[in-house]
Structure formats: C-alpha cells, structure tokens
Length: 257
Image (cartoon, rainbow, N blue to C red; front, side):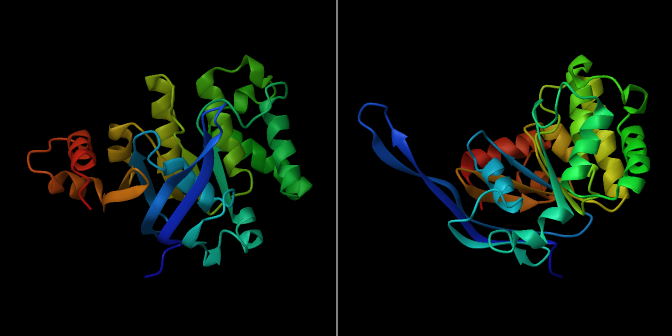
C-alpha cells in the first residue's frame, strides 16, 4: 500500500562558512539517503540527537526546503515543484513560543491565519470556537497571548495548526520545555487528533512520549535512519532492552540499520 508520505533515498546538503576570518566553505550532509513511508492515520515518529537531521527532514516534507536529491512526496506530489498541491492540505507546529502573535488574542490569531488560508468567513468563527474548545482555550479566547503560560501558547500553536483542517500535521518537538501537566495535555490532544483520522509526523527527544504516542518510529543518526519499527519492535531489536530509551541508546551507539 502506498503511503500518504513517500520518501526514497532523500538527501539534503548545504554549504556553510567554517570560521569568520578564513571564510572556508564546508559541505554539510544534513540528510543522507533516508527512505520511509507514512500511512494515512498513522503517528510516525522521528527520533535522534540534535543535528541528526530530523528538523531538516520535516522542513523538506512541509515544502520549506528543496531536497538535494531523492524523492520526497506528500499525497503523491513532489514537495518541491508541486508544492501548491500540498500546502493547503498540511500544517506544521514547531516547539517553543514562536508562530503566534503575542499582542493578539487567541481568537484574533486564528482569524488572522484563517484569512491567510482564505477560509470561509461565515463558517470560520464557529470552527474557531470548536478548535479553541479542543485545545482547552475557549475560556481564554479573548485574552492577549502575552498573558498566556508556555503551555497555553503551545496549545494555541496546535490550534493554529488545525485552522485549515489539515490531513497531515507535522509537529517538531511540540512539548519541549513544558511542565508535566502541560505536556500530558498536549499528548491527549495528539491522541484525539489521531482518533479524528489525522496523520501526524512527530519529532521528540522524549522517549516515553514517542513510546506512548507513535505507531512507528524512525531513529536517525548523522542524517541516516539507523532503525525503523514499532516501539515494541525497536525494543525487541535490542537484547535486554527494558524501555525504548534503552533500545534507542544501543541502536544509536551501534548504528544498526
């Protein structure tokens, strides 16, 4: 069965200066020949150390970066060259507090992004109420975002990511820096989105979060996928692994493909 996302032998390289005075150029291979599929309705995780290539992979999938080579398709369309067929059907959320306007209310933020997507003005106000209720912000809808806690801002970012009713939602470390209560609330929202039929691609550094949420996980190291399986399958790959964290550490250390 073909995936809703198809990645085959995907590469991404870029050139950076190595040293301010000498201005030497250095080629960085951020993603090196990765391949995977994501099926409709799946929560697919990307795990790896900082610099492993997770965010670069996400940026290629959401049409923000062009691949250097290889195949990168969403809904059967190339993410570079056919991006107009993709963008209205996806959305993305990056961890941290960027991505919303702090001097606007939650409701005005969502109205602004709805206008960017040219959504129906008559229906969108009702949809915004439903989305804010889903993320637990309906009672705070008209308060300025600058008064929100970090967890509330993250929930608003999820609301922003849902404004166009995307078929695929890309989440890059959505619970980073949150307290346990806020992180659990976001995980509950992610599970609800899966129940609603959304496909989710998730990056995280938290092993328990990946174990709890993901149907399958790809572990990346230095731009390559070193293992890809279900959380249970990854644990079974490593003798004596009692947790996904045990398996992850062993697989990244050995670089098993």
